Amino acid sequence: MIAFGWSSTPLWAQVRADRAPETVAVGDSTREARDKAVRGIPFTQLTPQATSKLSAVIEGSSYFRRMPAQTLHCEPEVLISLARNPEVLVSIWDTMGITQVKLDRTAQYQHSGSDGAGTTCKLDLIYGNDQTHIYFVEGDYDGQMWPKKLTGRSVIVLHQTPAQEVNGTRRITVWMDVFLKVDNIGADLVVRTLSPLVNKSADSNFVESVAFVEQISQAAAVNSSGLQTLISKLNVSQSTKEQFQQAVRVASARANNATQDGATKSPPKIGQNGYSITSAMSEPTGGKTPVTLGESSKAEASGGLSLGPVPNTGVPVSVSGTNASPKNDPELVSTRKGQASGAPQKAVSTDSPTIRILNSDKP
Image 1 (cartoon, one colour):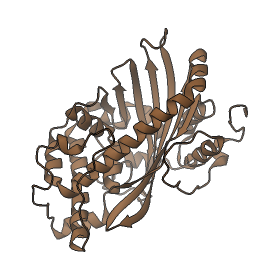
Image 2 (cartoon, one colour):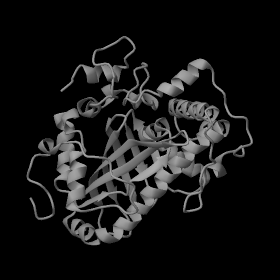
Image 3 (cartoon, helix red, strand yellow):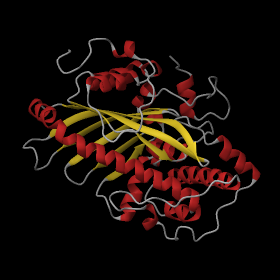
Image 4 (cartoon, helix red, strand yellow):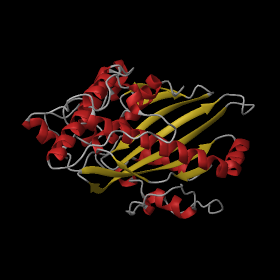
């Protein structure tokens, strides 16, 4: 099927590495960008079940967009923690009173969400390492904008790659590829027709979201205690809070080490929409003594957190209720592949149950 820019070549045969895009002002929906996006998906690291699910959406997609790449002053642990626990970001926005979106964890790698305007979805994180996270989304819309209930599926691929440090501050280039397939034929045609109008809004939402992530990372550097207090009040599971608090401690320790080497700390920027993370923090930025960690924590800050989808600590990425075990959902076992670079390939006593399942079924 070539008419809409789709290739007849099997997806797994198209895989090859592409250089990270430069920071750009607008996104890209061209065939060239789409082909690069497909090549950037690590199909060889996925199970056949996962590849089949992704391919069904990608090959028949109603809409594709590569969001504009952004280079952030952001610690990688903060970004990765938020990528794997997006309910933290939504809960912060809710605390600030700037969103009607709801996102709840329903299983170890799954969330259910709604936008308060008729759209509901199930989001499934099916792959994650220190550079790429892949989400499979099933959703529906039942609202005033369309006479019948609409259903669809989406594949979202979030990429990050290190950028050159500035004044001792780590920088990351982030971009996101979105493939959307709408099941209703009439709605599919409308989406294809109106996609140029949708693109501007999609680009803006992505840019503002990653800018807010940058604010959070900067807040971790200049006011870790205030951010820790905010996290303790979020409406997320305790294990999710603890994981994100750990990422904040690592970011804070690394910032303090860089300051000792002559770098300067910058307060969080205010986004283009006027929102700032400092408005949600109970303690004023710059009014607290920076957190100083011991030698062991400094070593941890240097090495960073475990970046695998499930840390090799015996503790899952996050746990919410009794549905957090992969035993409760066969799809969790059949579609999960991928670990951090350097993750052990053989089972060890400290592996979590999910890591043991993954390692016992390597491709």
